Length: 443
Image 1 (tube, one colour):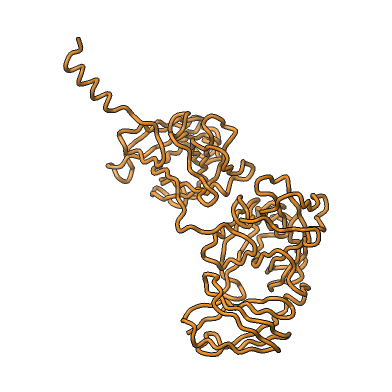
Image 2: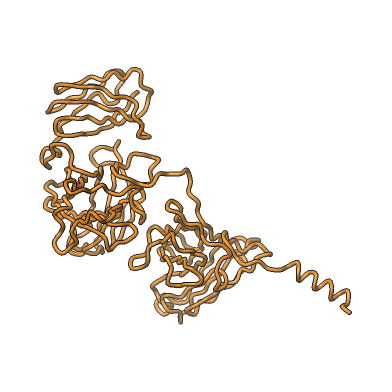
């Protein structure tokens, strides 16, 4: 016969059947087993928050004996109860971290618990000392030399590595605290990037994926503060092959429509030096072995010019354009073949990545400033002048919506703006040497 006290103990024990860990991991739910699986001499446990004794967090100590890859799996070897719900537009996780040093590389790795060969790794860098901060890990930007995010895999396990790449003998014993491991859902849904790429549409995800020592972001045009462009810095530690993918690892929404007679793309480039080789590479986002590369040299320093890339003229030693392949991803390489140590740190700007060759284009003609406009800001009439004949003027709002179209002839035009609401507008002017665009403010 079971004694009443024993029955109560069994009842209490059965009521505390502990659930397997799952995202989000907060270390505060008594109904969850927050098992931490260390490797490489790490030592982890759940403790009180060093900044708030009422909060529970994980503490991981990387001792002096730890190898550079020492880390901790969040939960048991079987991982989470559900797979991490990555999608083409939702590729991020976040972790709150309390580090003894700033500038420390934290690596997060996701994998299939049943097949460790199916994994993806990315990193973030601490910026604070002995203070909590939230680090965001974007798995569309995998660590160089590691596998791409594959949406066909079921990632249901995550491991965290503090000061990855530095062993304990070098760093000395360090203790890190961490909490709130979460999947980051997308905010307002943004569209996958697609050609043409102009960096103006707020509803497009203009994420760029750097590799080899590049660092890129969307900034104001150095020649026109009202225009948005990409800026890519090739650092003095960059590899010869450092570059930037236009978008995430998933590439463009649609395939680049190459044909036997249409094999060109163009990019507007602002380089610190003339004679710099710029390489453009297109590939199958799902199979990087299917690619084609070509090169053009800049002809101007510190000025915009349009470079035309002909993929029927592949770079020496690279694959030919194969129309049987799907090319839906593009990467650009500035000063290809020269490392940052040789060239020194250089900053490049680029914009208007497009399929095809602009009408009547020569680099010289398109780099000329053939369109002028005044006044800016405008109250009533905007006057446009050109060195060649005008065909039409289209007006777009900042969301990329066409809100007006005007026919034009001769080398000047006047647009009545009195009925337009106050704000910023993009004007696309079609001339004999192709389209040119500018922005103006309506008071």
